[in-house]
Image (cartoon, rainbow, N blue to C red; front, side, top):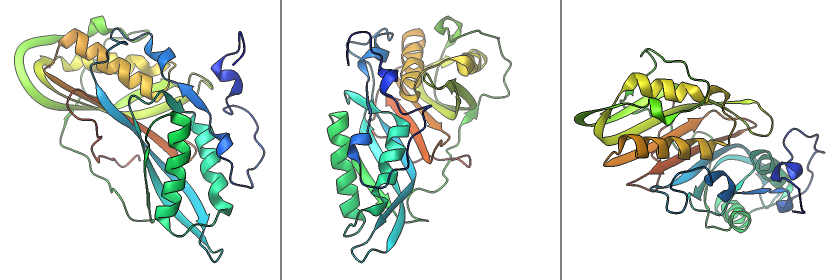
Length: 273
Protein backbone atom coordinates (compact mmCIF):
# COMPACT_ATOMS: atom_id res chain seq x y z
CA UNK A 1 0.00 0.00 0.00
CA UNK A 2 1.15 3.52 -0.69
CA UNK A 3 1.76 6.31 1.79
CA UNK A 4 -1.47 7.35 3.50
CA UNK A 5 -3.39 4.43 2.00
CA UNK A 6 -5.56 2.49 4.43
CA UNK A 7 -6.35 -1.22 4.42
CA UNK A 8 -10.03 -0.31 3.98
CA UNK A 9 -9.30 1.47 0.69
CA UNK A 10 -8.94 -1.83 -1.17
CA UNK A 11 -11.75 -3.75 0.52
CA UNK A 12 -14.70 -4.96 -1.57
CA UNK A 13 -17.03 -4.45 1.41
CA UNK A 14 -19.61 -1.75 0.82
CA UNK A 15 -18.86 -1.56 -2.91
CA UNK A 16 -20.67 -2.79 -5.99
CA UNK A 17 -18.86 -5.78 -7.43
CA UNK A 18 -19.47 -7.26 -10.87
CA UNK A 19 -20.65 -10.90 -10.92
CA UNK A 20 -17.73 -13.32 -10.86
CA UNK A 21 -17.83 -15.69 -13.82
CA UNK A 22 -14.47 -17.46 -13.58
CA UNK A 23 -12.16 -18.89 -10.94
CA UNK A 24 -10.46 -15.86 -9.35
CA UNK A 25 -8.07 -16.44 -6.42
CA UNK A 26 -6.84 -12.86 -6.88
CA UNK A 27 -10.14 -11.72 -5.32
CA UNK A 28 -8.88 -12.78 -1.88
CA UNK A 29 -8.01 -9.71 0.21
CA UNK A 30 -5.60 -10.14 3.18
CA UNK A 31 -5.78 -8.01 6.33
CA UNK A 32 -2.72 -8.10 8.63
CA UNK A 33 -3.47 -9.14 12.21
CA UNK A 34 -0.62 -7.11 13.66
CA UNK A 35 -2.27 -3.69 13.53
CA UNK A 36 -5.33 -4.70 15.56
CA UNK A 37 -3.17 -6.57 18.08
CA UNK A 38 -1.26 -3.38 18.88
CA UNK A 39 -4.02 -2.55 21.37
CA UNK A 40 -3.63 -5.82 23.30
CA UNK A 41 -1.65 -5.59 26.53
CA UNK A 42 0.34 -8.74 25.69
CA UNK A 43 0.73 -8.26 21.95
CA UNK A 44 4.36 -9.43 21.86
CA UNK A 45 3.63 -12.74 23.58
CA UNK A 46 -0.15 -13.40 23.56
CA UNK A 47 -1.27 -15.82 26.29
CA UNK A 48 -3.47 -17.81 23.94
CA UNK A 49 -3.46 -20.28 21.09
CA UNK A 50 -6.45 -21.09 18.93
CA UNK A 51 -7.94 -20.84 15.49
CA UNK A 52 -10.58 -19.08 13.43
CA UNK A 53 -13.18 -21.59 12.25
CA UNK A 54 -15.11 -20.42 9.19
CA UNK A 55 -18.08 -22.18 7.61
CA UNK A 56 -19.03 -21.46 3.99
CA UNK A 57 -22.55 -22.38 2.90
CA UNK A 58 -22.37 -21.10 -0.69
CA UNK A 59 -20.01 -23.57 -2.34
CA UNK A 60 -20.62 -25.00 -5.79
CA UNK A 61 -18.41 -26.57 -8.47
CA UNK A 62 -18.61 -28.88 -11.47
CA UNK A 63 -17.69 -32.53 -11.54
CA UNK A 64 -15.56 -33.86 -14.41
CA UNK A 65 -18.68 -34.32 -16.55
CA UNK A 66 -19.75 -30.71 -16.02
CA UNK A 67 -22.58 -31.49 -13.60
CA UNK A 68 -22.99 -28.91 -10.79
CA UNK A 69 -22.26 -30.02 -7.23
CA UNK A 70 -22.86 -28.18 -3.94
CA UNK A 71 -21.38 -28.55 -0.49
CA UNK A 72 -20.41 -26.89 2.76
CA UNK A 73 -16.80 -25.95 3.43
CA UNK A 74 -15.03 -25.48 6.78
CA UNK A 75 -11.84 -23.42 6.97
CA UNK A 76 -9.50 -23.43 9.94
CA UNK A 77 -7.04 -20.52 10.08
CA UNK A 78 -4.35 -20.73 12.82
CA UNK A 79 -4.50 -17.90 15.34
CA UNK A 80 -0.96 -16.82 14.45
CA UNK A 81 -1.46 -16.51 10.70
CA UNK A 82 0.02 -13.15 9.66
CA UNK A 83 -3.17 -12.31 7.75
CA UNK A 84 -6.89 -12.81 8.10
CA UNK A 85 -9.10 -12.77 5.01
CA UNK A 86 -11.70 -10.08 4.44
CA UNK A 87 -15.05 -11.87 4.44
CA UNK A 88 -16.66 -10.45 1.30
CA UNK A 89 -13.53 -11.22 -0.71
CA UNK A 90 -13.71 -14.82 0.53
CA UNK A 91 -17.38 -15.06 -0.41
CA UNK A 92 -16.60 -13.79 -3.92
CA UNK A 93 -13.67 -16.20 -4.21
CA UNK A 94 -15.75 -19.23 -3.15
CA UNK A 95 -18.45 -18.27 -5.63
CA UNK A 96 -15.83 -18.04 -8.38
CA UNK A 97 -15.32 -21.81 -8.14
CA UNK A 98 -18.74 -22.61 -9.63
CA UNK A 99 -17.35 -22.99 -13.19
CA UNK A 100 -14.33 -25.10 -12.20
CA UNK A 101 -14.23 -28.88 -12.67
CA UNK A 102 -12.90 -31.10 -9.87
CA UNK A 103 -12.46 -34.82 -9.25
CA UNK A 104 -14.48 -34.85 -6.02
CA UNK A 105 -14.51 -32.98 -2.74
CA UNK A 106 -10.91 -33.71 -1.81
CA UNK A 107 -9.71 -31.97 -4.98
CA UNK A 108 -11.67 -28.80 -4.35
CA UNK A 109 -10.59 -28.82 -0.68
CA UNK A 110 -6.95 -29.01 -1.76
CA UNK A 111 -7.39 -26.11 -4.19
CA UNK A 112 -9.06 -23.89 -1.59
CA UNK A 113 -6.48 -24.81 1.06
CA UNK A 114 -3.66 -23.90 -1.29
CA UNK A 115 -5.15 -20.52 -2.20
CA UNK A 116 -6.01 -19.55 1.38
CA UNK A 117 -2.68 -20.75 2.78
CA UNK A 118 -0.89 -18.56 0.26
CA UNK A 119 -2.87 -15.40 0.98
CA UNK A 120 -2.88 -15.85 4.79
CA UNK A 121 0.80 -16.90 4.84
CA UNK A 122 -0.07 -19.93 6.99
CA UNK A 123 -1.38 -23.48 6.75
CA UNK A 124 -5.16 -23.47 6.41
CA UNK A 125 -7.07 -26.74 6.95
CA UNK A 126 -10.05 -27.20 4.62
CA UNK A 127 -12.83 -29.81 4.58
CA UNK A 128 -15.75 -30.06 2.18
CA UNK A 129 -18.96 -31.82 3.21
CA UNK A 130 -22.13 -32.77 1.42
CA UNK A 131 -25.45 -31.22 2.44
CA UNK A 132 -26.59 -32.87 5.67
CA UNK A 133 -23.08 -34.00 6.62
CA UNK A 134 -20.60 -32.46 9.04
CA UNK A 135 -21.24 -31.04 12.49
CA UNK A 136 -24.86 -30.76 13.56
CA UNK A 137 -26.41 -28.61 16.26
CA UNK A 138 -24.56 -29.31 19.49
CA UNK A 139 -24.76 -26.85 22.39
CA UNK A 140 -22.98 -27.72 25.65
CA UNK A 141 -24.44 -27.38 29.12
CA UNK A 142 -23.44 -23.93 30.34
CA UNK A 143 -24.44 -21.24 32.81
CA UNK A 144 -26.55 -18.66 30.95
CA UNK A 145 -25.51 -15.09 31.72
CA UNK A 146 -28.34 -13.31 29.95
CA UNK A 147 -30.78 -13.09 32.88
CA UNK A 148 -28.31 -11.37 35.22
CA UNK A 149 -28.65 -7.62 35.91
CA UNK A 150 -26.65 -5.15 33.83
CA UNK A 151 -24.51 -2.12 34.45
CA UNK A 152 -24.61 0.24 31.48
CA UNK A 153 -21.27 0.91 29.76
CA UNK A 154 -20.55 3.14 26.77
CA UNK A 155 -17.68 0.93 25.59
CA UNK A 156 -15.79 -2.20 26.73
CA UNK A 157 -13.93 -1.59 29.99
CA UNK A 158 -12.13 -4.46 31.73
CA UNK A 159 -12.28 -2.62 35.05
CA UNK A 160 -15.90 -3.67 35.47
CA UNK A 161 -14.97 -7.36 35.58
CA UNK A 162 -15.18 -8.76 39.09
CA UNK A 163 -13.94 -12.03 40.60
CA UNK A 164 -14.27 -13.70 43.98
CA UNK A 165 -11.78 -15.80 45.93
CA UNK A 166 -13.87 -18.92 45.35
CA UNK A 167 -12.17 -21.37 42.98
CA UNK A 168 -14.41 -22.86 40.27
CA UNK A 169 -14.32 -24.58 36.91
CA UNK A 170 -17.27 -23.64 34.71
CA UNK A 171 -18.60 -22.82 31.26
CA UNK A 172 -20.52 -19.57 30.80
CA UNK A 173 -22.55 -18.53 27.77
CA UNK A 174 -24.25 -15.39 26.49
CA UNK A 175 -26.26 -14.88 23.32
CA UNK A 176 -25.98 -11.09 23.61
CA UNK A 177 -22.60 -10.39 22.03
CA UNK A 178 -22.99 -7.80 19.30
CA UNK A 179 -20.23 -5.81 17.63
CA UNK A 180 -20.00 -3.67 14.51
CA UNK A 181 -18.06 -4.26 11.31
CA UNK A 182 -15.23 -1.70 11.28
CA UNK A 183 -15.73 -1.11 7.54
CA UNK A 184 -19.49 -1.04 6.98
CA UNK A 185 -20.73 -0.33 10.51
CA UNK A 186 -23.24 -3.20 10.17
CA UNK A 187 -23.96 -5.39 13.22
CA UNK A 188 -22.40 -8.79 13.83
CA UNK A 189 -24.25 -11.02 16.32
CA UNK A 190 -22.77 -13.94 18.23
CA UNK A 191 -23.10 -16.44 21.03
CA UNK A 192 -19.99 -16.34 23.20
CA UNK A 193 -18.75 -19.19 25.38
CA UNK A 194 -16.29 -18.56 28.22
CA UNK A 195 -14.75 -21.65 29.81
CA UNK A 196 -12.30 -21.20 32.65
CA UNK A 197 -10.75 -22.56 35.81
CA UNK A 198 -9.83 -20.23 38.66
CA UNK A 199 -11.37 -17.42 40.69
CA UNK A 200 -15.14 -17.26 40.10
CA UNK A 201 -16.03 -14.50 37.63
CA UNK A 202 -18.95 -12.33 38.69
CA UNK A 203 -21.69 -13.10 36.17
CA UNK A 204 -23.37 -9.70 36.27
CA UNK A 205 -20.13 -7.85 35.62
CA UNK A 206 -19.21 -10.24 32.82
CA UNK A 207 -22.59 -9.81 31.12
CA UNK A 208 -22.25 -6.03 31.38
CA UNK A 209 -18.82 -6.26 29.80
CA UNK A 210 -20.08 -8.46 26.94
CA UNK A 211 -23.05 -6.19 26.21
CA UNK A 212 -20.74 -3.16 26.13
CA UNK A 213 -19.45 -4.37 22.74
CA UNK A 214 -22.78 -3.40 21.11
CA UNK A 215 -21.35 -0.25 19.53
CA UNK A 216 -17.73 -1.41 19.36
CA UNK A 217 -16.28 -1.55 15.86
CA UNK A 218 -13.77 -4.34 15.20
CA UNK A 219 -13.38 -7.62 13.35
CA UNK A 220 -14.67 -10.82 14.98
CA UNK A 221 -11.18 -12.18 15.63
CA UNK A 222 -9.99 -9.05 17.41
CA UNK A 223 -13.09 -8.79 19.61
CA UNK A 224 -12.50 -12.32 20.90
CA UNK A 225 -8.80 -11.63 21.53
CA UNK A 226 -9.69 -8.47 23.48
CA UNK A 227 -12.22 -10.38 25.60
CA UNK A 228 -9.67 -13.11 26.28
CA UNK A 229 -6.90 -10.69 27.26
CA UNK A 230 -9.17 -8.59 29.49
CA UNK A 231 -10.34 -11.68 31.38
CA UNK A 232 -6.81 -13.06 31.55
CA UNK A 233 -5.39 -9.85 32.97
CA UNK A 234 -8.28 -8.94 35.24
CA UNK A 235 -9.25 -12.32 36.73
CA UNK A 236 -5.99 -14.26 36.25
CA UNK A 237 -7.56 -17.69 35.63
CA UNK A 238 -5.48 -20.87 35.63
CA UNK A 239 -7.12 -21.84 32.31
CA UNK A 240 -9.27 -19.84 29.92
CA UNK A 241 -11.01 -20.33 26.58
CA UNK A 242 -13.19 -17.83 24.71
CA UNK A 243 -15.24 -18.95 21.71
CA UNK A 244 -17.58 -16.71 19.71
CA UNK A 245 -20.00 -18.35 17.27
CA UNK A 246 -21.05 -15.50 14.99
CA UNK A 247 -24.16 -15.61 12.82
CA UNK A 248 -23.49 -16.02 9.13
CA UNK A 249 -23.47 -13.08 6.76
CA UNK A 250 -23.23 -13.55 3.01
CA UNK A 251 -23.16 -17.32 3.35
CA UNK A 252 -20.20 -17.30 5.78
CA UNK A 253 -19.82 -17.53 9.51
CA UNK A 254 -16.58 -16.70 11.35
CA UNK A 255 -15.99 -18.33 14.73
CA UNK A 256 -12.80 -17.33 16.59
CA UNK A 257 -11.52 -19.63 19.36
CA UNK A 258 -8.78 -18.45 21.73
CA UNK A 259 -7.57 -20.69 24.54
CA UNK A 260 -4.73 -21.11 27.00
CA UNK A 261 -5.01 -24.90 26.75
CA UNK A 262 -6.23 -26.00 23.30
CA UNK A 263 -5.68 -24.82 19.75
CA UNK A 264 -8.73 -26.49 18.19
CA UNK A 265 -12.26 -25.15 18.51
CA UNK A 266 -14.97 -27.50 19.79
CA UNK A 267 -17.78 -28.63 17.49
CA UNK A 268 -20.48 -26.47 19.04
CA UNK A 269 -23.19 -24.88 16.91
CA UNK A 270 -26.54 -23.58 18.09
CA UNK A 271 -29.86 -23.10 16.33
CA UNK A 272 -28.98 -19.60 15.08
CA UNK A 273 -26.15 -21.07 12.97
